[in-house]
Image (cartoon, rainbow, N blue to C red):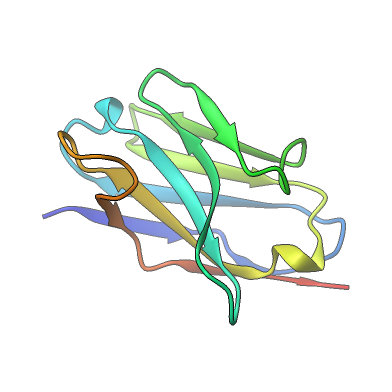
Length: 120
């Protein structure tokens, strides 16, 4: 059974930093694209950052230069380093993992999410 467990969320002041972690219990972790998404109250879930099995990264325009996604295949973990946080970054952050053989991100496994709150 696939399990994704996010951690590292919390309350931080604007300009501060947080590091999110997502521990994945999944076969062939290193072969999967991994992503971080977020959903703010009243808004749709949006992609924040994605990292492919080969290490290629993509970021939402709103977080470029502030957030960094990385992965540790030995630990089956993906990270999101968030610097220079803004109040508009407040959201529940979700980790997801590619379903091998299916179109990502239409088909993906999802974690339960971790709350990030940035105060002004």
